[in-house]
Image 1: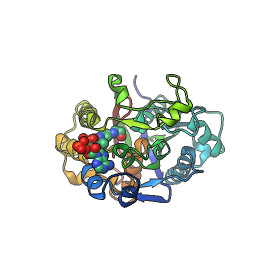
Image 2 (image 1 turned 45 degrees about the horizontal axis):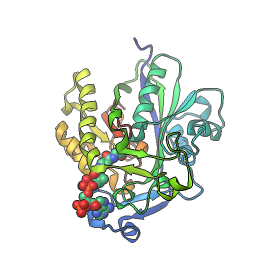
Image 3 (image 1 turned 90 degrees about the horizontal axis):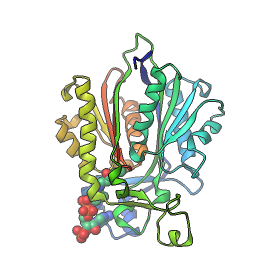
Length: 331
Ligand code: UT7
């Protein structure tokens, strides 16, 4: 398909709940230590949503900020795509609830279930709707409240997750614009779908007294099996877009990867042979916020003045499915 228009990221925003749970708090909940968590994952603290905060509440706050930074009003939005696996309800989609919160209606709004790759999948789809001229300004959100489906008796998983939202506006670029989504790649390897899963609550295992008692509505993850696959699949997703655009990794100004583990981020950086000063990391503050990690890190890096207009930014993620993807932009 020949694109009629270019797509660009015209605004970003993020929101995290106020409540902080640090590693010392985790020591009081499970048999763990600040030292183990910091050295094995790079995490120091994570944000926890309150009882009455659902995913759409976080998404709404981040969306308002993204709209503000794009100098747009809610009425300028003509599509909403939300990457999440912790939607307010099993159905309808969080995107529809967010549409109502923003006072909007009568355009497409839908969720993408791609685990931690949710925002990259959503951005990949949004790019195509902008390029073919169907939409002009798409609100693309990566948002998660994983702490609501975390088993706080399982030290293997409970120290890893936090809540947060990253929102972006993907807009039609003007012809003279240097800002552009240059390329994106998404993929999945379903053979490993059971390594990272919320087992109960769907049609395979509907909710029952037993499913609740056995904690089957919480995240199950075989972390060490996923570790290697995470590095390899994000590397492949990055390589594909670099090669396709005849770019050397040295020309990339910033790398933002999924913030699941500091050791994964470092291994990927090494494999790509990118200068570690170019790798954006905020895992110590927010831990793994799944679909929100990449857009949150992007927003923070832009707002802090690290990433500037015209910079070449490569983003990559990996998650349940097992899904993976990359996004290459000039901001
Ligand atoms: O976001 C979606 C994608 N997710 C990921 O990419 C996560 C990928 N995986 C990881 O980040 C890492 O595998 C983990 C952080 C989850 C685990 O680190 P690991 O170095 O792979 O540890 P492990 O699972 O191999 O466990 C090593 C030891 C075990 O003890 P034994 O059997 O050697 O005695 C665990 O029981 O560490 C123990 N352990 C802990 N110890 C203290 C596991 N969790 C903890 C903990 N505190 N919280």
